[in-house]
Length: 72
Image (cartoon, rainbow, N blue to C red):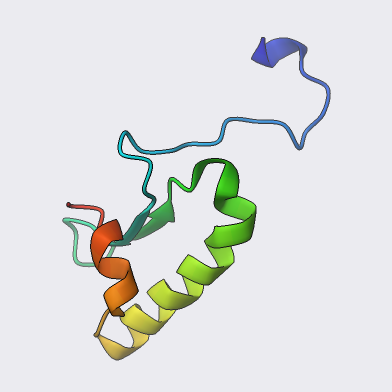
């Protein structure tokens, strides 16, 4: 019951059907995504964010991001 919750730390943890996060470019050339980490977002979000920032800055995505491509 989301309306009855009192702890603001608690909330939905979006994840993808295959369980892998979405990290990388979308169909729009100006939009990137770094989400869908589920309950691991606090731990993995900063790391995948750093890898995504590197990919945006250099134009070359690290090999670790290939299986997480949003348009897979």
